[in-house]
Amino acid sequence: MRASLPTLVVLYMLVFLALVFTVWIFYEMIRSLTERRFLNGKCRCAICGLIYPGSNGAQPARCPRCGTLNENQKIQLF
Ligand SMILES: [Zn+2]
Image 1 (spheres, rainbow, N blue to C red):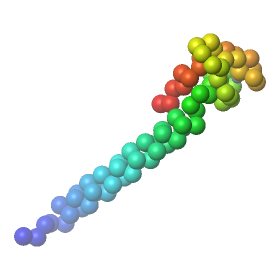
Image 2 (image 1 turned 45 degrees about the vertical axis):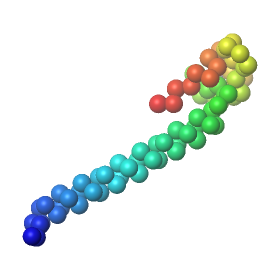
Image 3 (image 1 turned 45 degrees about the horizontal axis):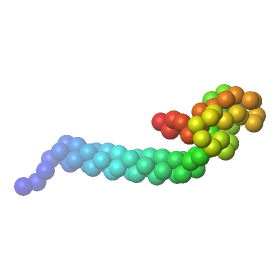
Image 4 (image 1 turned 90 degrees about the vertical axis):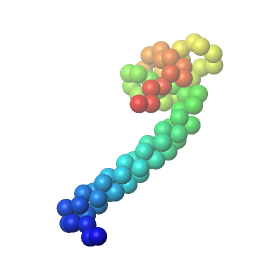
């Protein structure tokens, strides 16, 4: 049995989309892990975006550039 041309085109597109989707998911997982490791124990300023070492404990850490108090280790990755 031979498949018709439209069937082959649809099949090709589905395989291509599945491949792109898989690569995208792997890329996002690796990026998220790398960013998490990099930001571990650090603060990102909500005002100026500077990344600096956070304070120990639950106290908010003051940004060395603009002086804003930022929550320690509460970094939104997504
Ligand atoms: Zn700042």
